[in-house]
Length: 92
Image (cartoon, rainbow, N blue to C red; front, side, top):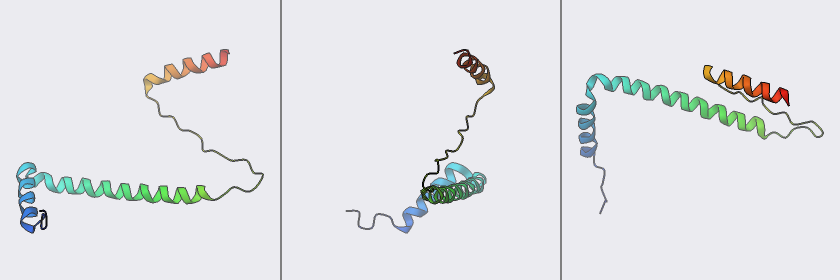
């Protein structure tokens, strides 16, 4: 049924519809954004792979395992709540 489902003229029709919908001025901007996103994704995937290789190495025997410090991002409104929590914890 779908033996030759995707013919070259199908791609031509899709390209024409995209140009009509988005306009010729927006397409280069979209392509640049897509390219930038792909570069970021590629670099992050490479960093994760290198990170995985570095973490997979077993620590020396008897050496305590070290964990990376946790980074917590807060907004200005969260600062007051964090102070209150720290004061409550210190009071205990």
